[in-house]
Amino acid sequence: MAESLPLRPPPPLLDDACALFLDVDGTLIEFAARPDAVQLLPDVREAVGRISDRLEGAVALVSGRPLEQLDQLFAPLQLPAAGLHGHELRAQDGRVLREEQDDDTAEWLHALHQQALRFAHGYPGVLVEEKGAGLALHWRGAPDAGKEVRTFAERHARGRPSYRLQPGDHVIEFVPVGTDKGRAVRRLMQYLPFRGRLPVFLGDDLTDEFGFEAANGQHGWSVLIGEREPSAAVFALPDIRSVHAWLRENAY
Image: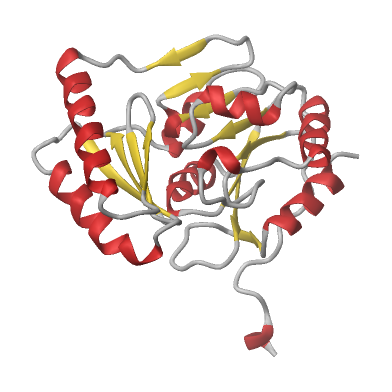
């Protein structure tokens, strides 16, 4: 019966005309109480590397993590990548492009960081992550504090039109306006070896909806990991384990 069919089918296998864009947390690796406590399975790293070779380097990581953390996770593999939702961008030639930050913004972020640390002190388990051009508040370790964390973030985002709040899975981030994963994908698609290929974006969270829309807008594929509505994704894989299996299948 039609009612028993999945809302989104699994993605087909990649062909040699594709470009693959991968979210990291919640897509390739399981979440952890602290961002620095996650681990990437060696065989997943190997599969991603093999796919990169097969697609002539047209594989990129698109993450809220900074490039430095991505490189540590994937070492010795170093891929084209968009860090901090695209605030940092590295093409295949290794050049890193970063948005400029003025002194006023730097001072505001420093003050915000100090205020967030004082706030988090009252909610054990809430984690403040300083991210250079942004700041993230995690409450995975304090699941009952979500409402208070969001209220704090909304209060401090008011009056700062150059920043927006980006909600995620037990996290809310202060992100520069105009910075998102969709813009990162579109920018990377202007460079070789991505240019002229079919973009395929895999992601799980609200931050990845920008990537889904960018891939769809260039006639590519968007793949949601897990179940979440609404979503712009066309395809879906049920969990991280199925992502690993799909990557291994595409690696050979």
